[in-house]
Image (cartoon, rainbow, N blue to C red; front, side):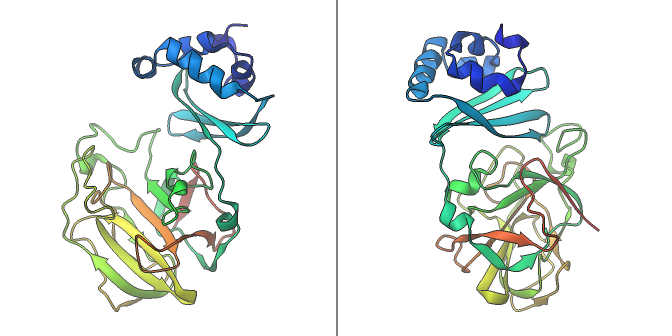
Amino acid sequence: MPVSSIIPEKFGEIFRSGQFEDIYRITSDDFQQLVSLSEFVDLSASFNEGVEHYDLEFKNAFLNFDNYVWIDDQREKAINVIFDKDHQIQGLFLKPYIKYRDSDNILTQNKYMMPVKGEWFIFWGGTNEFMNYHYVYENQRYAYDLVKVKDGLSYQDTPTDNENYYAFGGEIVAPANGKVVMVVDGMTDNIPGEMDPDHPAGNYVMIEHANEEYSLLAHLKKDSITVKVGDDVKEGQCIGTCGNSGNSSEPHLHFHIMDSDDLEKGKSIRIQFRDGYEPIQGDTVFNK
């Protein structure tokens, strides 16, 4: 049957059968500007070599898109496809399937709350790179990026002003009891779409918790931080507000737990949450 008439869950089967031209026809114009038909056919045929079948590993709703990942029978290759609501393919990635199982099995000794007040959306989070782009970087592997969303969008009106983003100015709180060990403030919030790679975390607060675990709360709003180095903080205490500073393209909170106060050399630790639920990309979290 024509690919345009199938449900997205059947993509793995269609791809394995070699119907690459049909698949290409339902990719977006932007995708076709990046990859020609002949390139797509050659890459896909090569990727299929040695594969008997693909299994749907997971799917989730991601703003106004549906995100699917298929894994081959040897669990060595992954196909990530992003469909819009009309089942047009907006993104398609063929990559090795990488899992860091040793670190996946190590959890924080402490239990934490998600360090926000109100309702927030998990933009990046999970234990593979398709749900969480941080996953391939040891120092950020189990990080979360959170935004606020209404009607499938993280902003109202135009996306060029920070004030139009629902997350901008949102209350950020301590994820557990601890002592503030590092504060950086005073950096200007970026114009949305622009980034500051020279200062990756932007304005941030680092808190030392029990068992030598450290939380990082990054990309905070300029001059919003309400704590200083040496302060003892309680779980749920406000430490600042969400901004768009540092290596950030839109207002959001970056949060992770690590085993050191060294941002570059510390290792990210998979988080145990106080409520027993580990959110992933596409989930909504809420704290009063």
